Image 1 (cartoon, rainbow, N blue to C red):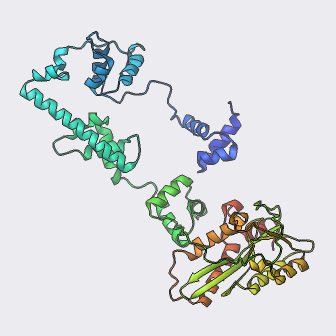
Image 2: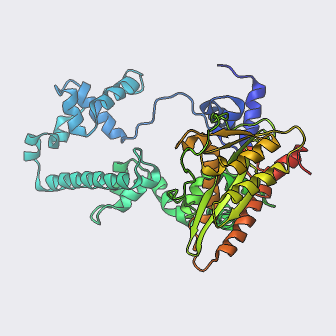
Image 3: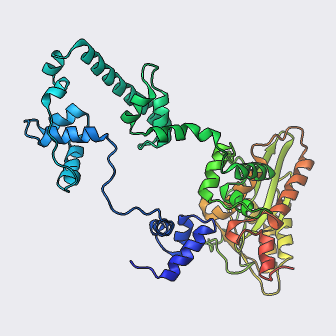
Amino acid sequence: MAYPQELINEVLDYLDSGHSVREAERRFGVGHESAARWRRLRDGNLRANRPHPVKYPQDTVRLALGLAYGGHGFGLDEVAVMVGVSAPTISNWKRRYVEGGHMDIPEIDLGEIKHLSPDGRARMTDEELEEYIHKLELKAAVLEGTVKVLKAEGIDDLSNDEKAAIVDALPAGFTVTEALPEVGLSSSSYYYCKAKPERPDRYGRARAAIREEFALVGGKRGYRYIRQRLREREDPIVVSGKTVRRLMAEEGCRVSYAKKRRSYSSYAGEISAAPDNLVARDFHAEAPNEKWLTDITQFSIPAGKVYLSPVIDCFDGMPVAWSIGESPNAELANSMLEEACGQLADGEHPVCHSDRGCHYRWPGWIGICAERGIVRSMSRKGCSPDNSACEGFFGRLKNEFFYDRDWEGVTTEDFIGQLEQYMRYYRDERIKESLGWMSPMQYRKSLGLAA
């Protein structure tokens, strides 16, 4: 498919600004491979179509071709065993080099390769046999080192760094000079890899900034948030999300997501008729106060238990109102709903979705909804995915505020104060990628929906 040059230029400008090819794929609808190819072509890094460079020494190629196709009577499989390469590789060499006119079939003197057969090895002198055994030991040591590196790295292809590591891992009886051809690494590349640790880290400034930003949020935000904060610094650092994720892992900046069982349930049986599920897992809204979600979650600390009851707006995830207390009673839910209704404009009658907890089926809650024109909606019995957006809010809240912290010595009153502070932070300051890296309140102000 041919793309217009204007689109290609836009994609290249987007990549130059620090975005990844995957982000370009989502933004412009082009394949990430095409985007990467355009950049390589522009930078002169796109190689012309040519035969893949042979990784084996040239002497090995000539020996294999001469034995296989020089009329000596060896079969292709036999030659493969003799020179230590696969039969398809030898066939590819013939197609690329012999049939391509780049090399004639070499003439091989079998007297020079007598060690390739058992009879030949029997006629070798002690010095020749010792040298032959030494080469076999070298090959075995290289293979053993290769296996160790592959197991440690979990990869299939060896980079130059890994080949250099294999050479360094060889026993003392082998020299670097004789080992390099066996791993397919030139001496210049080997010593370049050895000198790498002495060169300055190109991501040194990014690493320091990542550690700083990660510490500022208490280690509770992921790589997308950190990447955005790096770009918003006074001296911006523009790196891709993939690089930020790798650097965070290398620096030990891992977000801990504790898995906790939900020990509190407000379900008390079918105490009144349940309304239909009007939301039907569609947690999107075109405007504020169209769809609300609510639930109650529990926090257990050494000093006791604390309960949070919020109303979450599906428009932007804003906690419209909330109440916090030490008992999951009707007053906790009703006071929160009254506060949320106090922010409604004339003519606004949102759908308020909840689970089948008893708080939302008692006369007090039903009376507030009827008086304020709130349309009730309920999940199916025992089906938490029907209110998954609210559950997701609780998950983010607990990962960032509650889990992986020592609450020993904190009273329930102090805890309630800290939770209140976090809820205000979530509403007014916590930026979200889905809102263009603005908080819910900032987003509404940008749209003229809040003063």
